[in-house]
Image 1 (spheres, rainbow, N blue to C red):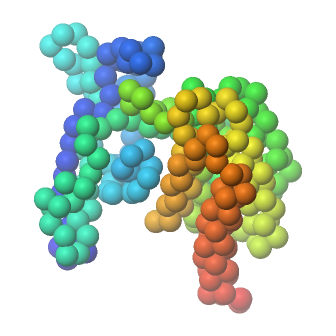
Image 2: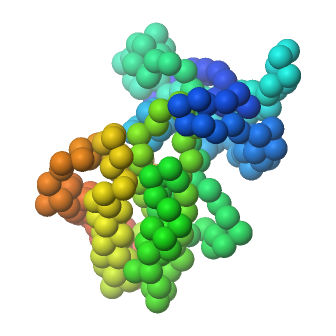
Length: 251
């Protein structure tokens, strides 16, 4: 295997049926089994719940413990970049173990949405989710606004934007512009809703293939600065869109 493709397999307990006292919740065995049932090898593994993709998930299983509780155990293949050692890569990973973060896929989810916006279920309510869906109505592309569940003990509230690269790259320029205008409107409103702040900074993440932006937004952040960050990411994605278009047959 070439040096650029080297990986190291790491594993650990991701979630359990134990009570999370700081959050007042307990995951059921059935909920954890549902995660296993929907698991697909090759799904991305991120550090710090999405700050940076570091590898791909390889294995997930539900195991009984001697005390009668259950634990979700997972393994991932972590990339070793050229010029680095396995030891240096492992040392650079966040300390404190693994935890689970998922975007809920409900019965109302469209197949293969071009855009998925997942919002922290402890920081927003159903009215926020429903309001965030409105700007996408009438667009000729599928979108989905759903809940983001983080099962760490004390996660930061988050808004996560996932763009299905192969879908949005195929959109006509006028549809792409309308879609991104709606995305910006929704994301900025969510980030600056007072109840989303609580006592912690909110984290905004934009992910699309290898492109990954993670921004921590303090409670007293200037909306204009956050808008500039968002628009900078949009410019990079637009350039990818235009490059793809110029390389398309007949373009």
